[in-house]
Length: 531
Image (cartoon, rainbow, N blue to C red; front, side, top):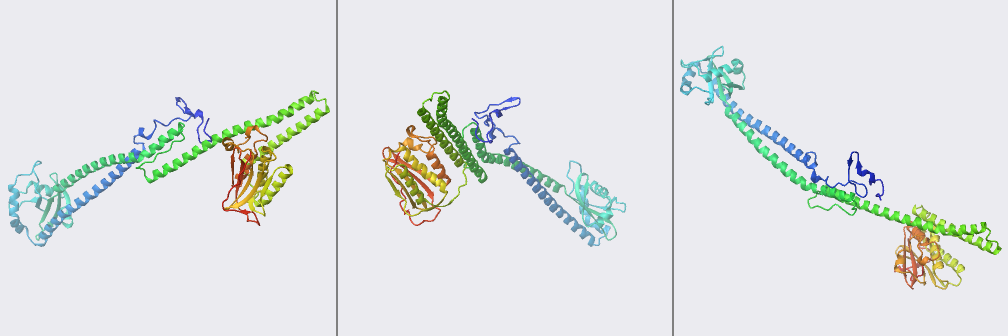
């Protein structure tokens, strides 16, 4: 049988085009083997979270590295520029001429002349200064020709005049090495170029970049590993949910998602909500199955009960049609039987309609009803019908309750009819009503043969009759339906040989009235009889 409602797939959904799949007993393809444990690719949630964390950290490392390297380069270049600017300002403010400058720089000049010529394999001098003429060519000092470094510096500056006028040093390349250069004009108009090497600065920045990249790569790998481990632990509750869903799809409606020690607040909330939903689904399925079974039993019982009077009526009509009822007395007796069975069938149909309306939860017309008066009226009716039955009535004064009067009359009528039908006429019966603890209790009790435990458990079932007795078996079922429509309760207390007591408890929504029994112990009457 398919599960109730549109939320459960049909049996023919276990097969897809061109591919055969195994379905469970409801036709639902199992999810086992397709859990999150089998999907570790980049398209999984675990992979996406890992990639997102690694990407964010990579962006952070790249930004931090760029900012730190730019700051370090700016700081070191600022130091170099400061030294060059101080030297330039000192020479410009000293009012020296070229001849005086030659005398002061002879020592440094001889150092450069004695030093080996710079090659690609040998280090370049850290500082270079050279004197240039009007065309920008280097000139000798103390009769010596300019060095290769001085010539390279002079040739790397395209516009010495603009350089001298600019207060900020410029970047130049001398024989493949980076330098910062500035210029100054002496008192006699001689132009001098001053340069400081920045090769060590660039090498330091390059080493810092490599170190940052190595550390960043290590951090990214460590983050990826920790993220996958952490997400794996956090994903275990979700994997448990998939396993639970698979088990439920295979028919185990009792499965629930287990709790996890490492679950986050959101996952725990999802687990609780899912378990609550699964409980509702299981309850709905069980209720639907129980209702379907009750409906099948009800239809079978109703068919059986209706078939009996119809068969009797059909039999008498066939006897009359075949002329077998020639005696007037036989015809009169047959006619009375037909009318009796028709009345029985009519009562049965009326009771079935009443139960059907109660199942639809009809809107009752509530008003203040004097329950004591209803009990006294029902007792009087019973005295007229069975004058020899001992009857005790505990319903003095008036006791008001908010209820549907016709419904309460039907409840009392069915209870009294149950006593009248299933107990001898000399069996005492007690009818009582009382208010206690905010409720009103109606009790109909007799001293009849009573019921056993198995019969007492089924006394409110439809078409249930003890020992195949008289009646339709719907009276107490109607009583239960009407009482539930009033938001009340009905209970039975009985034992073999001790009688039967039916107690109806209703909310006391009306006034107290002018009488009635007010009790603090609430008890229902004892006694009892057959169902």
